[in-house]
Length: 94
Image 1 (cartoon, rainbow, N blue to C red):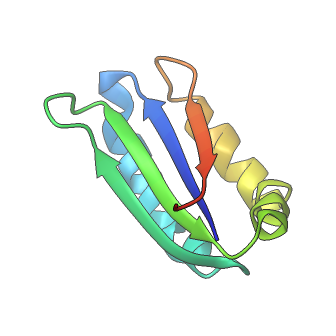
Image 2 (cartoon, one colour; image 1 turned 30 degrees about the horizontal axis):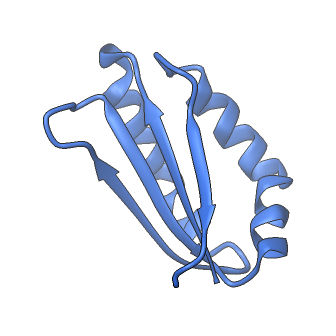
């Protein structure tokens, strides 16, 4: 299992736009082949910093998602709202 954590920092005025986009697309991401879990976290004390936390059955499942047209569209819309470049980690539970 691959755990994927993505940190996203938004312009404050874009937070609601991001939340609406995430809510609209959350179920598609959760049901994407190979995704077994998805959560959205907000950093305490920083209302404009969010993390996605997802579980993927395999690295190839994650790669298939990241190369999909759905992801490309979602990510381009999300990136347009950023205040800073996103950070991402793929990790495994020990």
